[in-house]
Amino acid sequence: MPKRIRNPNPQKRPPKTTEYRGVYLDKKGGKYASKFRLHPNTSLSRIKHLGMFEDPKEAAIAFDWANLKYNHCATSVLNFPDMVHNLDVEPKRKKKKLNARNTSGYKGVRQVPGGKFVAKIGYNNTSKQMGTFETAIAAAIAYDQAAIKKGNRPSK
Image 1 (tube, one colour):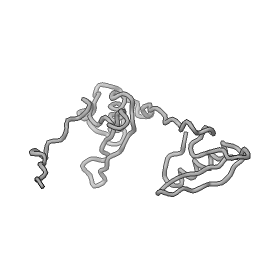
Image 2 (cartoon, one colour; image 1 turned 90 degrees about the horizontal axis):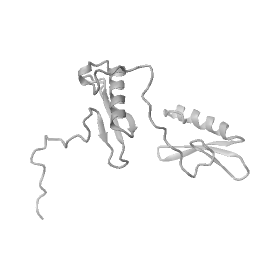
Image 3 (tube, one colour; image 1 turned 60 degrees about the vertical axis):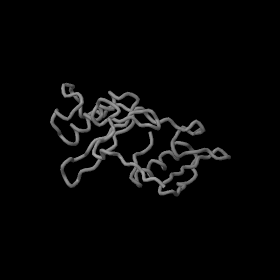
Image 4 (spheres, rainbow, N blue to C red; image 1 turned 90 degrees about the vertical axis):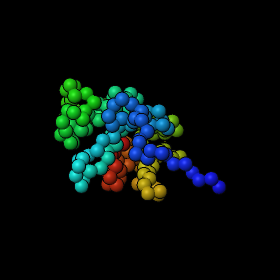
């Protein structure tokens, strides 16, 4: 069996997919992902995912906003150093759409025969049912409380 040929220059990375720093094209969804390094050059350094964006410029603005807000970095690492960023307001992102089969209008809530609503949350390849509720809003509140308890952001 012939030997596999490795990259002759292993240090060379594939070219960036956009001209913006911290913005990459997601091959699966065709959207732009924005990531940045939180607390660079420290032992607490980690990569933070900022979200998916339709436009690379929106993702680049989110990258700049996060770097200014969390890292207090110099303008030399920003995509738009001349832009004035309002750090009190997060960059706008499109909200995720609910599944087309969702009839309750709330994430994690479904209607059962008899007109009642069930709240159910999944994590670690298991699911937990919070109970049966008279209204969809009560079930959504139970879902949100369970999401906050497990460390996720509540649904919107």
